[in-house]
Amino acid sequence: MPQRNISQPEELTREETQLLKAILVKMRDDLYAKEQERKHDGSYEISRDDISDETDLASVETDQEVNMKLAEAERHKLALIEKALRKIDSNDGTYGLCEGTGDPIGFKRLQIQPWALYSLRYQEDLERNRRSNV
Image (cartoon, rainbow, N blue to C red):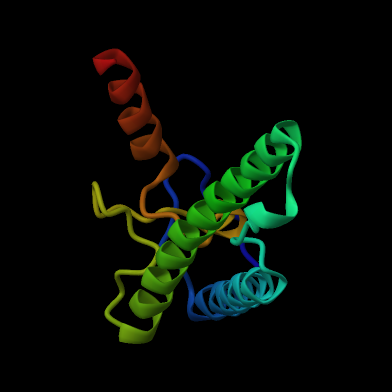
């Protein structure tokens, strides 16, 4: 594979896009399986009838809250993964392009976070602006 210019990422090749699609499909399937496992295991349910001690109840409620927040974060990630897969399947060339600038995101960044919406530079600008507005 030819060496890429780090300062300005290039658009993805067909092979890179297919590799990233396979990664996204695996991630999506794993997240769906995890969600089904949580539902099957009853991770979302608390039976207060079985818990008489208030400390135990507080502990179980905390565990449930953590599970719910993790599930919410995973659902958000799943939505981003689905969006990336739709972009790839539309074959309109939008996958791998920054939604803020239209510039290529870069294969290395997408290998780490294949659902990324923004180039690293644009993402850093967004986060810097959020921090300065707080």
